[in-house]
Image (cartoon, rainbow, N blue to C red):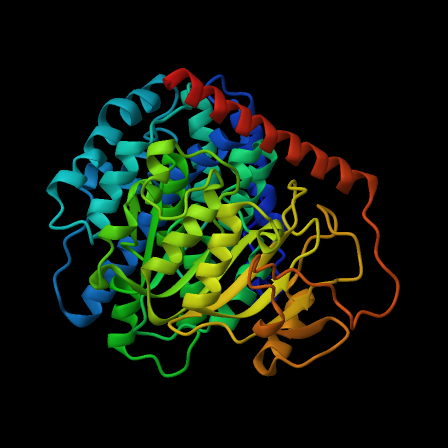
Length: 508
């Protein structure tokens, strides 16, 4: 039997502690089921298949909430799905005592044939029949146009459905639990390799970035490398927690606050579902290559108030894509940074993760990009993150906080030092970033923070790397595992560069 659901006060405490061992066990059980299925070969397959089933269960509970609200207000309600395709009809028909009616619940070949030949084709039609792309109907159509059922055994599919049916998403606490679990599931994608890891940024770091950038309701928030939409989902939670929100505020959050673009198909679908599962019914996320857009084509109407992002590292874009940018570079993150600067409104604020080598690299692209950033934006804060911040990635990163419209005069640095070697067993947590968020408000000096004047920066190289002269105490050395991870990451980057060179030579 699936593990018992956690409810009540215990559930609230678990939410704020970030602990859901029983719910996590449910997902482990589902992974075990999918592991033995011939159609699912990796963690990426597991989350893809879990996602569409979880989404349909969530959609069913959402429909029930809307039906109840409509009945209480005396208004009619037209369900999104025809009754034949609703969860309670095909996935989990119930007996009078509330248990699954196994006599009428599809299983085996019958279940697989229904899902593949009837359910998915029906849900795909929503994309064409929706009134606009800014509706949950359109998003349903997009999701099921991009995904397909990979579970080959209808009996395995039945087991997964039975476990997901145990979950409930009716109350706010239950929805918090579910979104937390889904985030944990996305995090585990990092175990499937670099492509999975690209989708996940540590949530404590995202929360700290959002608190520093401090968006307000009415501003448009953008992530051009949206991945699993972790930045946008956390920004929604941050704004939704505000006091005295009006009905108009809630509608603004739903329809005209969160925007994103994503190139990769699976990340795009997971990003949409992640936002819907957090409570944004029709997220403005577009499936496109952000870097294929020419910077010269960006107009004032295209700009945003807030940019928060962790763009992918490494040179992967074709030479013709680089022509969309005034500063040519094989480093994808450098192209994204140019895009972010361009797409910000005057006075707009940004928090962007980038490799720490950006601060000091001597190649022409790095120097030119630093010059552009310092002259067109106020780069007021740099958060220096230690190795191990991103699990499975040996590269060190910094977070650039800047405001567009006035040149940089002073830069405040904070060297994040949790006092331990971080990794899978000691990941970044919210407490690690508390001091940074507080000190950043006044940009005070401490043993971990200091400031420099732009006048002290070499105007030929614009090198903005600096040592912490205020540091005291012992240095925490990296473990052999950290060093091996960094070597592996550097080897992977070198391999990508060679692949790009070969592609260029082959085209010539």
